[in-house]
Length: 182
Image 1 (cartoon, one colour):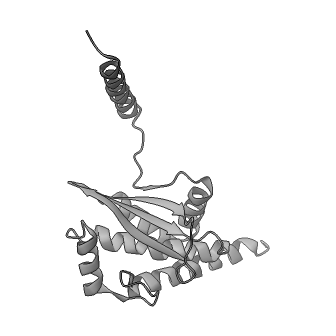
Image 2 (tube, rainbow, N blue to C red; image 1 turned 120 degrees about the vertical axis):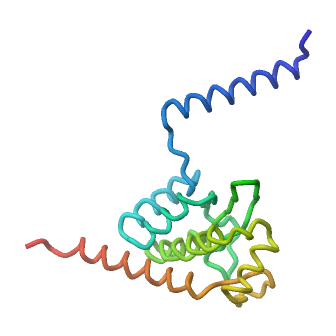
Image 3 (spheres, rainbow, N blue to C red; image 1 turned 180 degrees about the vertical axis):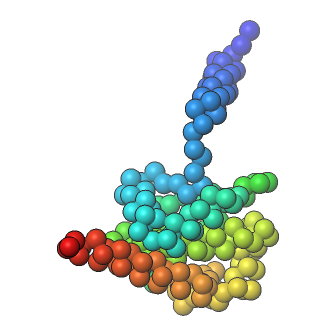
């Protein structure tokens, strides 16, 4: 005789198998850059369309073992417009969270997104960055401690340059779209 808990677990397990089988049959895409926030997904789509650099970062992450969850920062710090953090690591998969302060205007927010996605690519390119110590070791090698007042905050010249490049591309594409056509 099955108990209520056993039935519940059995139902849950069968449901998971069914969902997985349907997803596989339908060839559902399993994106490596995700968000449950529609505004964040709109930003990502628009940014990748207007900025070749942002598009390239997303493509690199899609080909990696890293899954990135994008979200707006619920408690933004005055010294940080965005940040990336390692959530978890399991064999064959690393999970990151990128949090961005939504108070920044559109183009600047996309530049921040590019900056943080560059950090995600840096982590993806470092197989040893599977825990907080590994990420800190990576940034001691390729980056520098940032001026946020926290000892565990790092940055990299490449991420800074990437954010600037994304902003330039977004501004150029926006200006080109606003010009009257002959």
